Image (cartoon, rainbow, N blue to C red; front, side, top):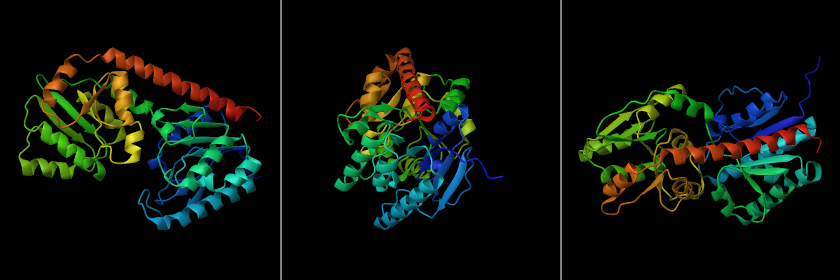
Amino acid sequence: MAAKQNKICIILPCNTVWAPYYFKYEKMLTDNGSGFDVILWNRSGEQEKLKGRLIEYRMPDKTNNGKWTKFWKFFSFAAFVQREIRHRKYEKLIFLGTYGGNALLINRFLKKNYAGRCWLDIRDYTYEWMGIFRKLEKETIDNAFCTVISSGGFRKILPENRQYLLFHNIDEESIRLASAAETVREDGVIRISFIGNMGKQYVAENKKLLDLFANDERFLMQYFGTGNDVLKQYCKDRGIQNTLFEGRFERKDIGKFYARTDVINNLYGNHEKNLQLALSNKLYFSLALGKPILVCKNTYMQKAAVKAGNGFVIDDTDGIREQFLGWYNSFDAEKCKKAYTHCLKQNEKVREVFLYFIREKL
C-alpha cells in the first residue's frame, strides 16, 4: 500500500543543529495530529531524527562560510525544492529561514501556485544588502499567508508597512531545566557566566570584559561550553585569576550552570549585522529566571533588555564596575518575569495563527 500523501511541507535549508526552532513547528504540527514532510538540505551529512517524513537534499556545504561559490548550491537546492513541491502537490508550505534563498528563488512558482498558502519564518540577516534579494524577499512576503520574525530588529531590513508577528526564540525545555535546578549561592562573589559555544567572532568582546573585571575578587568570570580555550590561555598569559572554565556540556545539564550564575554574559559584539539586529535566546533565560544580563551597546538586544529592565550595557568607560554594582544591587527580578510572560503571550498568538493556517482551507 502506498504511503499516505502529506499535505503540509516544511522547507529547511540547513541541518536542525543550526535551526533548533524547527522543533517548535514540529511540535505544533504533531500536537495537532498533522502529518507533514520536511524537505531538508543536509549540509553536514548527519542523520536527522525528525517526526516528519524526511526528504533530503544531500550536498556538503559549510554554513556561513562566506564563499561566493555557494550561490550555485542555492539555485540547485531551490530547483530541488520546486520539483518536490510540484511532484507531491502539497496544500501548505512552511519556509523556515531565507538563507539559501529557497523561497525567494522559486518566488514566481509560489506566486502562481501558492499565493496565500505559504508561511515564512525569518530569523537572520542574510543577503538583504543585495537589491535583487530585497526585491524577491518583498514579493515573497507579500505572497505569504504570514511572516514571523524572531526580533523586532529585523523590521529595519524588511519591507515597511507589513504586519510581522514576533515569534520569540524561547527554548522552553531548557528554561524549564534551568528553573528546576536548585540555585547554588557563593557569598560575596557575583558570578558572571557565558553559557554555550564561544564562537571565534565573540572572543574579542570577552577579552575586553576579562580585562575590565580582571582580578577583582568581587566577581567570578565563568565560561561554560566549547571554544573557550583561547580565553583560558588569555587569562593565563595575563595573570587573570578570578575565572573558571568548563568545556562541552549536554543540553540536559544546562540547568546546573544557570544555577551557578548570578549574571548572564551575552557579549557577542556588534560588528556584524545579525549581532546588531537579533535577539539571543539568553534574553529569555534572563527574563524567566529573573537574572541580569550583560549586553553590547548599539544592538537590538540592548534596546530590548534595557526596556525589560534586565540588561546592563558593558563598555570600557572608567568606573564601569562600580556603575554595574550600583545597578545590580537595585535589580528588579519581578519586572523581568512580567516581560517574559508578555513574550510567552506573543508566542501563543503565533501558535493560534499557525494552527488556523494549517487547519483552514485557504
